Amino acid sequence: MVHGHIQVFSNIDVLLDALLEQWQTIAAESIAARGAFHVALAGGSTPRRFYARLAKATIEWDRVHLYFGDERCVPQDHPDSNYRMARESLFSQVPIPVSQVHAMYFPPQDAEQDEEGAAEQAAQNSAARYSALLEDQLPEDTDGHPVFDLLLLGMGEDGHTASLFPGTEILDESQKSVAAQFVDKLAAWRVSLTYPTINAARHVALLVVGEAKASVLSQLSQETTNTLRYPVQGIHPLGDLQWYLDKAAARLIEGPR
Ligand code: 6PG
Image (cartoon, rainbow, N blue to C red; front, top):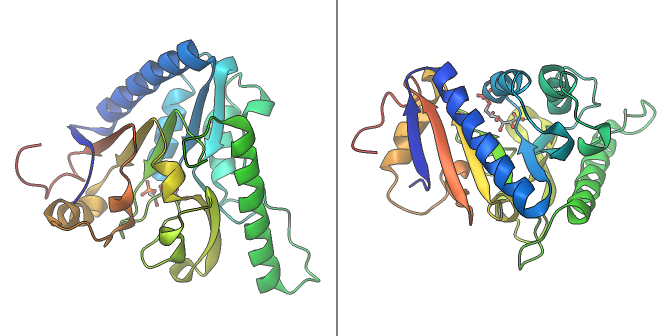
């Protein structure tokens, strides 16, 4: 079972235009209501294409605060870093004040230290720091979780979103706003917003593009129970959830939408 409103677009360019329009609408509302627009970025190839599109758009960058929904536990100049990807495709191209880009930070590891223990410690520290940063920057919901104006998310072929992977403990996290998680299949630590934070957002946009996602989308659309077979099923924000799919990803979904 999935929540939200599903939109299917004939190609990625039309999809990105529609997402840009939603960004602009939410940004205008947020700036009018609270003076700023707080948005969390996703990693992955589909979001990257959107950032390139955003970099060419007319946006009030001095009112925008950029955050990250999840991060790989690597230094910021590492090829796997979501921060690096967003820097290259977006914020090195636009006049956003540096103080308004809020990265999840991982210090370079000390080669002398026990690697495994150090990686876990770095991930836990980064999650705690980011949680404190969000507490400082964003309004809170009644449970004390930070409220983003917009969260951009992707979805993996296994139904993961942000760094909420199938079978991991972070899926049960109900207190922390940001948590560290070791992901066995990646043999790596990740830091991610948790469900309570994602679901406190005013708006969530899920970008799912390409043939490779068709099978999991079809499984999701046939799920009749609320059990979390796929982590993306746990996304049901207080605000609205919009799915942005292209035709290839939506190929196996049947019935009226
Ligand atoms: C990450 C992501 C992740 C991503 C999906 C989809 O850091 O890996 O935040 O959740 O969005 O894996 O990625 P694609 O768009 O590349 O398929």
